[in-house]
Length: 68
Image (cartoon, rainbow, N blue to C red; front, top):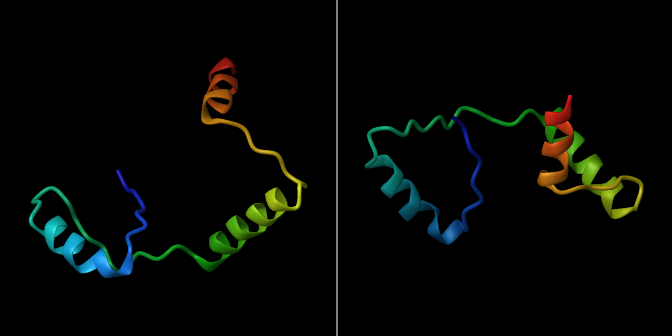
């Protein structure tokens, strides 16, 4: 499983030091989110802000996905 975390800059070193003590966690610093994906996320966020795209809760989306 992969996750992305937002950590305050002033707490990053302490967090990274702790994570390194866990034998079941692998840190891959070379993995980067591709620019096209970042651009697409920013485009969609702008569409939401401009009222051009609506959002829905995870509960609603999950219900629709599981119906099919």
